[in-house]
Length: 193
Image (cartoon, rainbow, N blue to C red; front, top):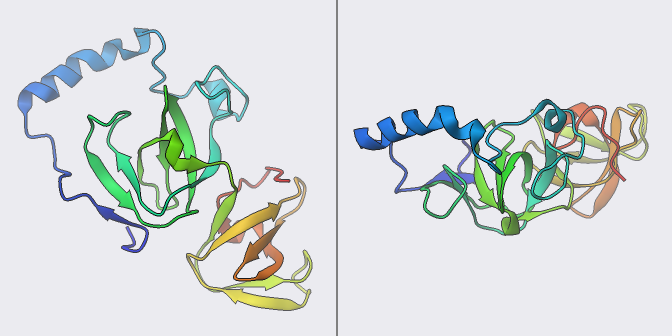
């Protein structure tokens, strides 16, 4: 994982206690029967429909980090160890599950863990993927170039029309269009207003 996004928590360690492993192995098969526990997504959640999640919001969905330092934990609660500490405000994150006030999230590199809901913001951002990309004046490859966006730059999403391969974004004082496939933080068929 890139160091300027997150760092591994110094107290993160593999499970060394065999009793804890046995307890998890014994309880995990019964977890689906526990009322109110949402450990796995249901087909309705995966399709992006509003479900019976604690927030009432669809799963999966994109949000961003609210603070400049956010702990990602191995489980949904402060009793779980911190696996990563994110150091980048507005970093886009995908919420993939919910348990009470905790959100299971995935970052652009595939790392998953749990973050408290107060550390997340509904503001839509995205991160530039791959190589240097061109921000254009209009939603066209032939449009005038406004700026070059380096990989891993965070942009704020202004709009992504549903049937368009382009998104209007803001970054470093510029506002323009970038191809949707060059961003992580918006789905290919999603409309963002």
